[in-house]
Image 1 (tube, rainbow, N blue to C red):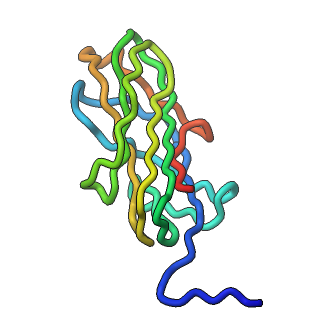
Image 2 (cartoon, one colour):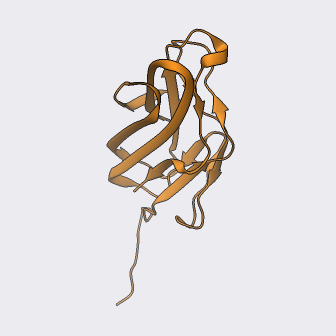
Length: 145
């Protein structure tokens, strides 16, 4: 029996991974993490728009996960949060106070086709030379399932 979708879009999981490292900017300011690549091998149809991951289809309970491994020149507090369409905070992860570790954040929310998810990072290391660097590659990601 064929599948027929009327008046809606079929949800498809998507993901993006970090392309190149990123040194965190101004202390105690939330800032968008730039430099992402669509993970089309693991999540076909993934699309990056600016620094965000575009939602493919609508979902009433989509799970979004992000992981940002980092290393710094000194111990400090680090935190990540998920943003919807650049204006709405979906979730803020727990504080990671260390020289290195992984900032993580997750949310289960309703998403519409074309919504864009970005991740922001925050830290409290004032001396620029010691600020954390977010790693690149498949271990640094944002995923919508």
